[in-house]
Image 1: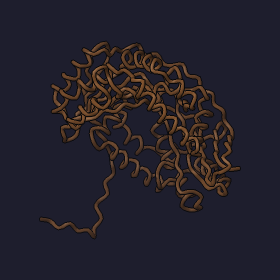
Image 2 (image 1 turned 45 degrees about the vertical axis):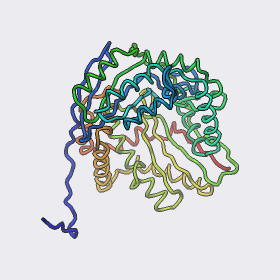
Image 3 (image 1 turned 180 degrees about the vertical axis):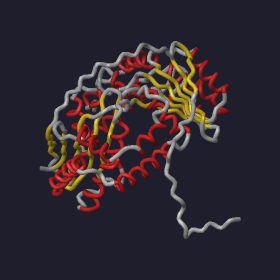
Image 4 (image 1 turned 30 degrees about the vertical axis):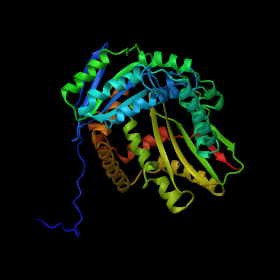
Length: 426
């Protein structure tokens, strides 16, 4: 047996290509497709049903989130406890969540138990009765959580940032208040459920290790279910950008929450992947410029980062941090200085290479495992991207120059229409 020489560092190998696994696309009924991505070594599967039931479709605030959370609360024949107990017997469970642009119901189980778990999962999704008692409990819990959140500077900063980026009535800025939660009724949830779940199935995805018989079983259950697709029309969403400085007073605060940002581009834009890389260098990881300057060199905050956040009907780029009130002015000045520097001075090649190696390594790590791959596939499907979107990532990154990045900084990091939100003590 060869002894490992720990005094010698392992070799360095540049990442030159990336292979995204092949997947099947099978029509189940009426242009509802099943995407099957086989990967991993364990016979565990994840089944996702994606619905046109996100925040962009709700008719009143809190409707999408409450509908998603109530889908596990019982059917005409099974209580929430009975459903959970029956699935738990097989070491399985399901969860539902409403996102900005869609809603997802997910079942995790061993493939050998799919025939027992799938009927329970389908029953919960197609026969949900939204019990009044459970709804009252969820409303009380939501009101309690809201009461806690509204005391947090970070929550208020996030809320006011999206309000000024998209407009108070935009679904991406939908932060419910107590009145919104109280206005939720069983009837309003049932209406949304019927229109956006039962008649709003977009597609189905299975990932993990599975056989053709599992694909057939899932296809048969979906085909024979109540679920129907509908012609999805892009929602008409008007963003009302309100640039400038916005201060929200919290007189008892020692810390100030800060978010500075602006509207940005979607994943389908040709510049998006290079802009992601530019954002990484600026504030997207621990070795970023914001971290080195404002945290490491000047000690003004424990952490600061920048985010490029794309949704289907709008995108945002922002810088986020919590900072001691006495250091707030200095911190904000340093942020704007860093924006100007990255716009006016080419990024050194050593900094680019370090960030590139980190980015490619972390990206490969994010593709580790079948469920992570399924998350990436969902991005491809939702944004109507090509199957080469991720394999092209390596070559695009390796061919990105300092001049490219400086041009993108001037194009997308302009401060002319920037939104600055501060929550804290004057």
